[in-house]
Image 1: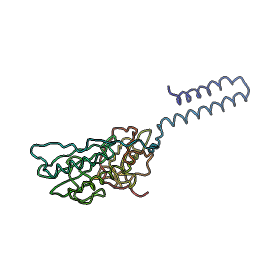
Image 2 (image 1 turned 45 degrees about the horizontal axis):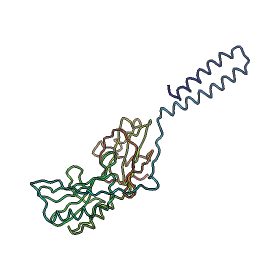
Image 3 (image 1 turned 45 degrees about the vertical axis):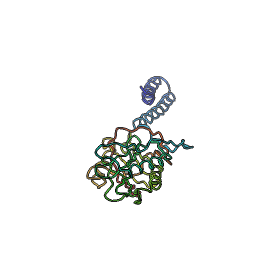
Image 4 (image 1 turned 90 degrees about the horizontal axis):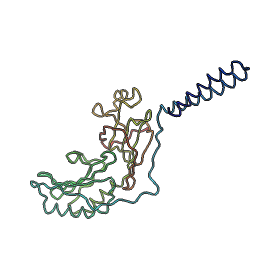
Length: 285
């Protein structure tokens, strides 16, 4: 038996035994036994109730000082395809891009490149923490260079530029491309969590400087009773069922994930089903 329930059971026994022992005594004995027993019983009840609510989450900020920046010599490895070989221009661009990327922060980051069939040369960057947070990269086609968030499976550019988009450039503008990648890698990222009964029922990764969402999760089974139904009824879901965490109230805890290209160890989470946010800022309070 754990401590809160031991205190509760012991104090109840104290009340019973104290009252029994005082039957032959005077009223003062009975009053002392009763008051002390009630106090201990109340303490046990409070401790037991706190345990039922579960552990209280704690915010986790960035470590001070920041850890050393991780670097990598391996960037944008080319996935070779005999049916779609890069041109001389594309290979030269890749070589220059790799050379510039060696100065970039690499913690929590992976990258690769490939030549799409009869399409552009694609250079992909992925940021992850427990799950994939953001996929972005560059498309080089006919000497034109474009960069933006990419589809996380087919790595296509969005139909309309997002707030992350790089101004269109030329294949020779490698320095601009490296600077754009570095800017995204150095943006601060945080994780918001909403808790009930000792477990998070919703979580959201977002850019800390703009609150633009990256990925999010909501588990109805762990949420407060009726919350999931109310959010659906109020239209706080995407495509009919994916809850918008941007519409939730203030989070119970905020965890720093990335600052200035450094990525930190973060506490584990339950097995959520993550889904992407369309770079949506949080709703005004």
